[in-house]
Image 1: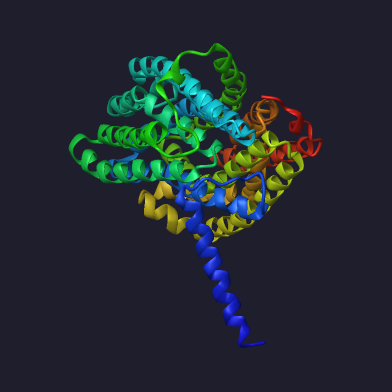
Image 2: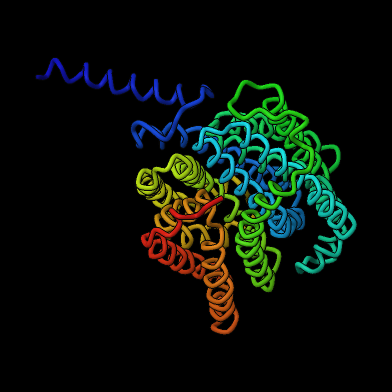
Length: 467
């Protein structure tokens, strides 16, 4: 018996290595048949790595900008709080693309998937043009509205202007990755973020050295632009199951309406959440630049570890979409619970890391004593709800993958605006808890979101959505 055990271990390790290698290869897989656990892992590995790279964007900027002082960190914090509105629109479009492409792939109609993808890109280009013009001209006013000091506005307006001016690369990076995820080709989505981040990591310190905080915005926008070029190459010239031809870009109002139908509620869903984060940041701003900077450092670190869990939930969305397209709703539901279980295990480990190691992590990011104190407190409190976040994200993305973006939108509207913001204000301002009140409101609210999602998901109406 003892002589056989090492052989079993070797086989297991080889199997794991083979599975990871397969997941990163980019080869097309049929996720509507076979082992669900294998399907979750094959999709999750590249999606988790993709989300790791998305979170690196925020961490790299805050790391290098932190050397320029509290005003620079506050600029990044306030700009990112507002530009999450752009992310929300991009994620909403990405969500629609993932749902439509996944459903068509499950139905074995790849050409229709490609046509839907092309019309989503048309819509994204139009919206990003409008956002870029508004944001570029209104940059100083945006910082002022968010409560920035006069000095912060003077130093940071150029950073805000460049990021908003480059909204098109944010839009396309999110959207096209949603197309690849819906097709089940998560490795291309992963590599686009790795390339974009690699460029940002190289350019950020160099451009900050020569241009100050403005250099960080140039580096981020350039890195994302290079990632988009990589995506477009694979959409037009690649060998994936979804390949777009120029004729697909001829406006098709029926397809555009299908995209808008899912995207507008998906965008609203994230706008509701993002706008609530802006209000939460505005509440924090009452307590000074140190509180803003500390809160933002904590949120960046928080997102760095949360986004990999979002990668797992993206895998659930793809599996739901493809299996509903293949008329296998029970397999779609089983995929969700499998992904939720794996996500919970990951989040337990992250929660322990933050409870015991947050000070070391924060100090690496920023040396200012006041900023460190606020960031450490925020991380320790927010991390108490990590397991809940993991399950909630999978359930939310399961609705989205089915094309039912309305349900999580309504949940977000109630939980974030009718519950979280009043709770945070009362605890922070009325009860005098200061920033601690805002920190406590976050895990409490996320618990409410997860519980609501679980109760509605169990009813199973999402299985009957037609797109």
